Length: 302
Image (cartoon, rainbow, N blue to C red; front, top):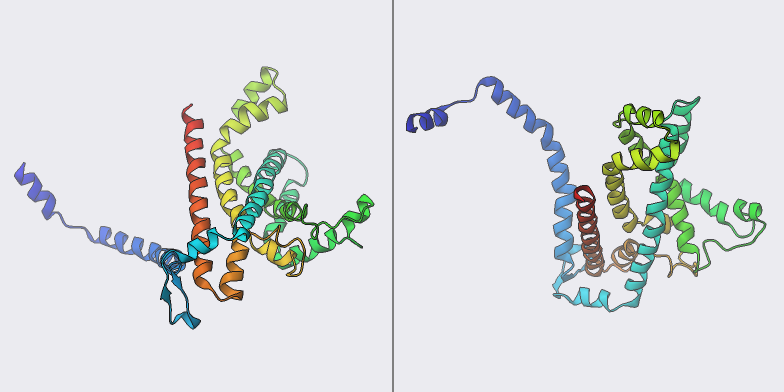
């Protein structure tokens, strides 16, 4: 036994193994450096700054403990922004997933122009956010907007505090629908056609196949899309920033937590409070993600 241990210890790598190790590290090193510099370091830096009152140009920071957290948790604006964020996510996430799933199933069949349809539905993902905001602001315009013209109304879609958050959520659904569809299409490719052929022989129609074959076998992809979309929905900023003006009366009922982070950090130059808002949102996202993961395990093992 001792001789075998010595032989294992004395075993040297061959030149091929050394080259594979070097090339392996060479390939993953840029990604690791990018993750550390762009993701990991900013996370810890933000957490640290949340306990400080930051000075100008990053100098003169003063340690204030949990005062920043006490401040944000005591402000009604934070809780309203949290409610707005949840309101947006509750509308955007399920509808974008459901519509994308139906589109993926329809466009997974053999049909004329299938590639063109897939491209059309995916186009909003590659369009510039500023262009998307400009087009939808024109559609929502209360005076000459296309939506009011078609409905014969003069509804203030993005300036009415009661419906502005839902109007912005509709833009989010339209923007992300194509991306979700592509993910579902990738998942549908892994489902064997034998299941559908066997069920067709037994007399199953398309609706039965969708709920009893497609959805159960596509559940891992559905859970992945749901988790990523909840995280993305809770981090919404660009749509609100570009669609809602600063003087918009519905801004208070629409602004998200990330929007408040932007206001505190870059407009009010109070990066300590802004960092506390981000950490607060991070904790909420982590809690919701853990709940989703546990729900996924419960569904798999039940």
